[in-house]
Length: 154
Image (cartoon, rainbow, N blue to C red; front, top):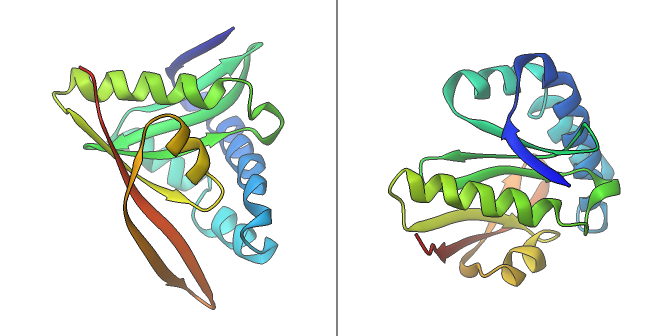
């Protein structure tokens, strides 16, 4: 069974560990040193503590362990991560369903997100459509991302 709830402060380190493991799913599309840079400089304890102060940050719990994360920035869904070992087991769909309901409760009818190459097929499978393809320069890497959206059934 998958339970979605708000992340607790004492779970921050566990959530960061899940995010770091989940980011390894991107290794077929992005080099290891790029993933390492993101994990070290962006996805760390200080970042998540700041996130908790500013917005709701949700986790998926499977067998009493954090299996994934998701949050929002207004109408944009952000920080969707599912532990690499638990991908393709319904965790991502459960997180997305929950966060879409949260957006509806806040009065939004259109969800937006940014997908990387690895996550693009997942988002398309659950009804998101591509709006724009972007190429961003992150230090020496060119990173491809897709702005996506979905009309919510509120």
